[in-house]
Amino acid sequence: MPESTFDPARRRLVGLAAASWLLTVSRVGEAAAPQIVAVRVWPSSTYTRVTLEASESLRFKTTTLANPNRLVIDIDGVELNSLLKDLGGQVAGGDPFIKTARAGQFNADTVRLVLDLKTDVKPQVFTLKPVAEYQHRLVVDLYPTRSQDDPLLALLEDYNKGGGAAAPSRPQKGRAGADRPIVIVLDPGHGGEDPGAVGPSGVREKDVVLKIARELKRLIERERNMKVYLTRDEDVFIPLGVRVAKARRLNADLFVSIHADAFISPTARGSSVFALSEKGATSTAARYLAQTQNDADLIGGVKIATRDRYLAHTLFDLTQTATINDSLKLGKAVLGQIGGLNTLHKNQVEQASFAVLKAPDIPSILVETAFISHPDEEKRLIDPAFQQKMAEAILGGVKHYFSQGAALARL
Image (cartoon, rainbow, N blue to C red; front, side, top):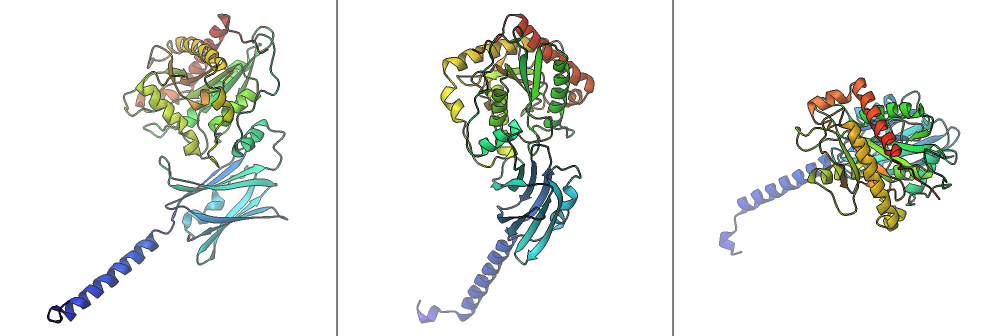
């Protein structure tokens, strides 16, 4: 620059501007430090989950201690706030794994969480990226050390290690409903960290479908030639692949997944029944609903991205094709019964690639009992009388399916 154009005053202004910019960057960096925005605890007999939701991804270290049993989690770059201080208040007295919980500022840059445990546990601690309405999450899953006595726990452990759906432990012989009881697995959708769809007044899908499933289970237990199981009987998150694996482990003859979904339009209403599709969804709505249900693992959160190798290899073989045909027959029978209770969204069984319907050897349907996003249907879904009638309609469809000679032979 020529000497005649040099301006000391201008140079001081540039310097002040640069200093101001650096200060602004520094303050932005400070503001970007992780902020804990929610703390949740989900106890169940299967496992307990603790979730810390934050504005940024959390860095952590874990330590297990004995005598007494404790799990210590140090979180870097976080300051203690009121949500963390109230961690102990989130722990229910009946939690099977956590006795007490507390959080404190261990040092200037670290918050320490201490979970006092009632028993030996196998902790799994991992982070999840933002999805749906959730920001970054740090997840602490506490599993009992002994899972061999609980088939669901064993399946969860295998799933988290990347295993596929377990084959039936002992293939059953004979015709279901004739030579032996019909084994039915009911699958209340969502659960735990995954609420499912939420209605206009705040009703959660996971709650109403569990009530319908429990009522249906009660009705089936009164049938002399049927056995029934639930994939979950608590407010707990179960991955989709584990739901399928549990049905196969129990040698199920039928799998019925129960939902009450939402749609992008609040005017959508009516009941629907879905089966698996080999060739894509039969409608835009079916494709949309399948995507929302398949996102359950992302919302509920699993330790690692697992792929069911068994299903991947058998999905489109002849066994699967025959199973889909049976699923369509079952779906038609159930749809016919539901149509007497509620308006039908579609008059035929729809199809889409629902992950929870991919058992290669079990006729499987997904029942959308009503649209929880519709104000009138949300009110019906929380009505015990409607829940009972919906359960009766589904059971009526199952019984009609078998009365038409649709009995399975496991050879």
